[in-house]
Amino acid sequence: MKPEDVFDVLCRRSLPVIKAFKNDLLVHDFNAIKAHPGTPFLHFTGVTGTNIVMLVGPDEFPKRGEIIPYLFGTARRERILDGMVSLVDSMRFCNRSALIQLYTGTTVKTISLEEAKEEIARYRNYIYSEWLGLTKDGQKNYKTINTEKRG
Image (cartoon, rainbow, N blue to C red; front, side, top):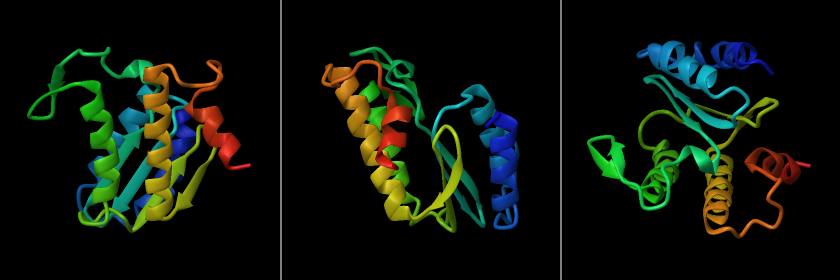
């Protein structure tokens, strides 16, 4: 799917749910999808807007040991990744779990919060495995692992 097609699916499904902060979807999520075409993501929608968690490759995180500006301070890559996991878990508390969607890199599907938590756990394990050099097949990436798990 082209980024515009992915975004169209999100808009059709998400806009009827959102009552405030529609620019979360229309500006921020659109820009994230456009900047990372084909990258899997988790998308959370509620009456007060959206959150998107881009499941980028291991090379898009800071280098090992590097400290970068992050939110209101600084962080290493491990803190950023663990923060992504915490963000997914927090969606149940921040009014953003009315509609949860997963873009696999090829399709957009609606999933449950439990499925989103399983997805982010698989992603976290994949990223740590890559960082530690533990993956069995260096040619595989999260997208191919993700597709294989779904049959």
